[in-house]
Length: 275
Image (tube, rainbow, N blue to C red; front, side, top):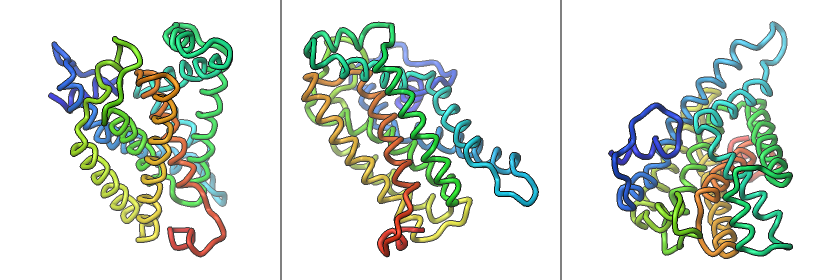
């Protein structure tokens, strides 16, 4: 039941949700968010690999930008665009903060319309995700990169729901899931994602090795650290957690993890991590 609930909360898969969703079940479902990321990552990786194979031309390097763009589009469709909508709402709320304060910013985030700050946020985050994935494909790390990034993004949602973080609103998804994930379950989720990331790096479609496995684990850790800092800032700024913040945390953590996976710096340390 918890796994099915996790998929109904975080994807557009045609699954029937529970008749009654309480905080206990919501917490168990959010603890399984990385499992949702694993399934979405595998699905996206298959699409990306298929496009890489079918869009190449004889004597030329296979395409990287088109598979990357389609892969990110698949992720957006698989979640009904809810995470991007949360990112847009958060962008509008933060854009209004200096003039109107916390309460008005929260009201803006709950409005159905999207303003200029929201559009800018979505455009740049999606652009960075596509470019980073394209760069990772170019250096033959595309498959492991998309899998690790999508899992880490959903892991960030799990970790955001731990501790004693209050909801910013008395209703909505934030009120349902804030503070519901047990610390033990969050630690197990983190360890599980690191283990899968290492395995994916070792068995990568483009040629796995130990260095790639280490890079994948480092990307998970850096993405998770970024997500923790972002959650702390947002909950301090708004006084709690909302569903929009969870969506934004997922998208931004996915972006950061993809950037880490795409980075290739001329240093011995990075060469050791799988260059």
